[in-house]
Image (cartoon, rainbow, N blue to C red):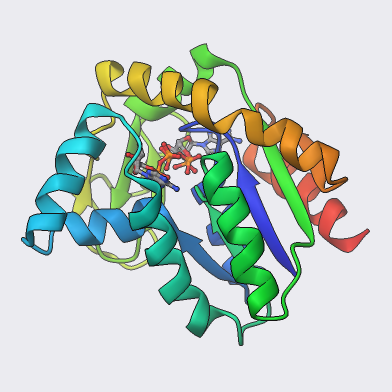
Length: 215
Ligand code: AP5
């Protein structure tokens, strides 16, 4: 199955994608992760990407479409692809449709994780991630069992993202409502949209997604 996880920053897309990878052998294609890798590469493109991300704005469509196009070549052979954070504009949605059809693939479901803005601020400002294995934590709702050490891989490289502050988040939310939320109508019109309560506990959200995928 090939699915899109759609939702504002902090909705839980990355958290759920990691669980789908672990339990269903799907491949997660996160444009946010790809861009974070690009920004640490030290290239001119990486520096431009870093500035845009830190301001909370969207990177240009041609860059992210190019990244997804390359990654999809390898991922297409897997048991299914999770598009996490892509598409984010109508142009990206059209490009994804064309990329999938070129490869003879279909989009099986779009899952919108719906969460209110106050919860997003709380989630984003408390988030930290393992720099080694990518496990996602939260200061209050999901702390590590041993302070300063990842539960999954034992690494002490726990990081906070440069754009996980209230100012960047305000801009990221603005970008979401202006440029990404029109995709809700776009995929609804295609009969692909499934709306899930992203405010529910992680396990309940996981069960709701499973119900969609197994239907
Ligand atoms: P990206 O990395 O995609 O970030 P995002 O969409 O802003 O989403 P997040 O990763 O912040 O949140 P999430 O929904 O994955 O939540 P998570 O599971 O971590 O993009 C970053 C930037 O890159 C963009 O601003 C843009 O500049 C650029 N970019 C990326 N893609 C692009 C594209 N296609 N086009 C152009 N530019 C692009 O959860 C958050 C926290 O909440 C965690 O602490 C977690 O533990 C907790 N949590 C999760 N679920 C629950 C739950 N159910 N209950 C309680 N706590 C929960």
